[in-house]
Picture 1 (cartoon, rainbow, N blue to C red):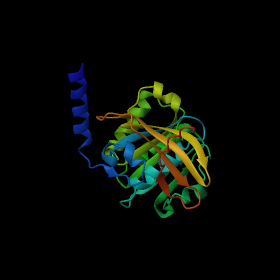
Picture 2 (cartoon, rainbow, N blue to C red; picture 1 turned 135 degrees about the vertical axis):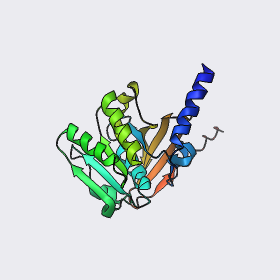
Picture 3 (cartoon, rainbow, N blue to C red; picture 1 turned 90 degrees about the horizontal axis):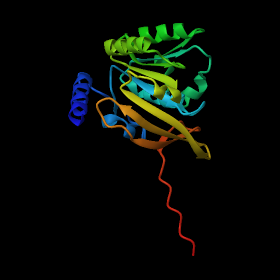
Picture 4 (tube, one colour; picture 1 turned 180 degrees about the horizontal axis):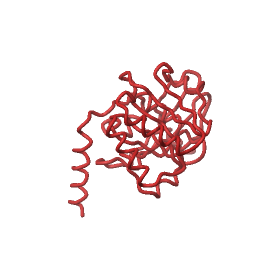
Length: 223
């Protein structure tokens, strides 16, 4: 069984290495990714442990990095929950961003699939309650065709379902202090790599900067 697992990881790594990975420069987020890169031509899940956990923020930060080479970022929003002014704080370049407002989930899926199949798109973000295997596979094929990254926002309940994502990131909120928001990001699955890495990142609401949270010191023993 161990040999079979190693063989599968080897095959998946060989398939992924056909395209160079996308370097991620944000502290903390890079630490949980294989070789500090996003696999190009693939899907990445940002799973929210609870509503408002920060999965949108993580997806935007990763999407920004995936488009650093000058390609376009696509955001498909069928719920009207995306707030552009907040995204500006994260350094999103609106000259290279396409926001698609939709009213139906199937239209959101169609826009995301077509965007991922286009080589001019660096990353496409879409939110879903769930995805069946057929639709998931179509998104995966589109990402492989275009070479960009599909960032899928899903609830943590999706962890119980099969996935075609190369990376699955679980995002959880943590207690924050001052203007900085703290998020815990854990890689629960990485194709061809061992998962389990996690990091706590801090986002400064005033500047939009991303920091790796310093570990807390151990409590001093009582006198």
